[in-house]
Amino acid sequence: MNPFQLPRNEIEALVAEHGTPIYLVSHAQVVENYRRLDACLPAVTLFYAVKANPYAGILATLARIGAGFDVASQGEIEAALAAGADAREDLIFADTVKDPRHIAHATAVGLDDFTYDNASEITQIARHAPGANVHVRIRVSNEGSVARLSEKFGARPDQAVPLLAAARDQGLVPRGVSFHVGSQCLDVRRYLEALDTVRAIFDAAAGEGMDLAMVDIGGGFPVRYHDEMVDITAMGEVISAHYEALFDARVQLVAEPGRAVVGDAVALVTRVISESERDGRRWLYLDDGTYGSFMEVLLYRMSYPLRALSDGPVTPYVLAGPTCDCIDVFSRDADGAITTVDLPEMHLDDLLVAGGMGAYTFSESTRFNGFPPPAFVDLD
Ligand SMILES: Cc1ncc(COP(=O)(O)O)c(C=O)c1O
Image 1 (cartoon, protein in one colour):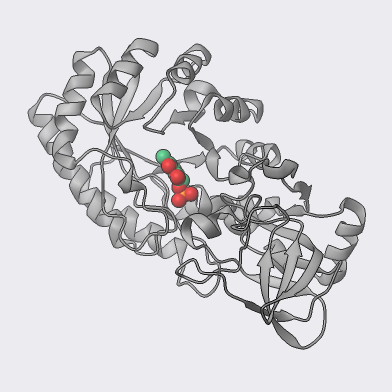
Image 2 (image 1 turned 90 degrees about the vertical axis):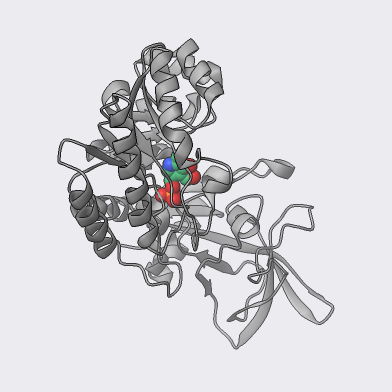
């Protein structure tokens, strides 16, 4: 169950017990989201992207149902291992920019699968993980996605084969190609175009004597925050059909979903701790904000469904967090300007619930001004 829909009296009872701000976690929803992806992408091995939400309870739930983990640092490796993952079987190090000390740690615990997109990364991997399996990440279109990861990551497709050959020359094992269509990707064509590009790279690599065996389609699967058209099953079926048309079953398919596994499995409950009127607009100050769970509002103009546990006439409010920085305002329009949101009238001590708070909230929260992140409350 999406915890955003939890009855008001149950949320109030949880707040009476745990205080605010809190994350309400539905592990049943995590499992349902994971199994949906697993079912519609039958040939795919799923590695949950720990960066989306590294809460130990969520990692343990995913480990229990057999998920693998995509990790980006020593901290994420340790978190996945603590959840019960096996370093060699269940982990891939899919971040292309790696701290060499973290590569060495990965090697020490048995992780032997790394992604890279430039020659210096080959040097780093060869130094600290000699003989490891490697994937070259290519830059693909992120058009229409919320987080455009290709701006920072991925080699040009024409660089892929030379980079794979360079890895082989340094004693690494070139295993395949990876891409990321951008986070919150609503257009399945991004995956299909990317798979076409990978097919061409496989053919060119074969011409250089390299028999590639794995395609990593990254993350990007979306969450319905408001009224976006999201049909994960349909998306997965289209991707699977395209993969089957392009590759033989020997080629292993891998995905690293984050947002779609945890996004709608967590709701945030935050409380009004101050209110004011400024230049004719009513402001509410909550005990969580941009430096806490709402970082993606600033980064990507993210907007979350909101529900006030109050009654009264609909009133436009500016919503701000508790820190002493002026950027800590999370009611913003598509251009990032401060705007108002309509909510039932709210006052001091009232509760605001935000939905879709599972991905890139806790993991991106800061310690600014000494505010700790919200506590987790497991609903099941
Ligand atoms: C390498 C890599 N894999 C997977 C993911 C997860 O992406 P998403 O949460 O969009 O599924 C990310 C997100 O930044 C990433 O950088």
